[in-house]
Length: 88
Image (cartoon, rainbow, N blue to C red; front, top):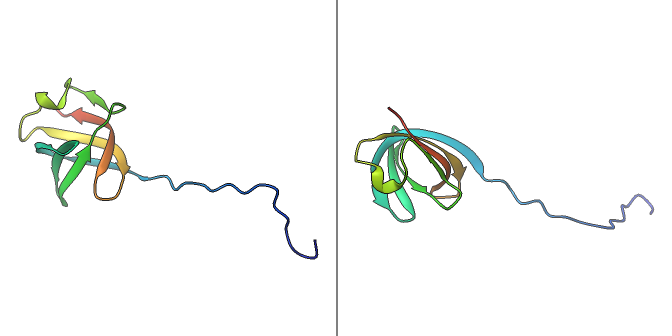
């Protein structure tokens, strides 16, 4: 239509959160998860029903200083973990 586009359907795409991989030490339970001490400073790690644990069954099994690897998404002020792995 005269150099214009007529849209029949418009869909909004939601921004996907940024994926992150972190390694650090367990610094204690907090909020909906735990605090991970990293080289860049402490990071709040949130867990939910979809988070998988490798090398331990629940957060209650962790002890201060345990070395953890975390894969998840930056959700603004915290990381929502999809996987938390205990390093040997």
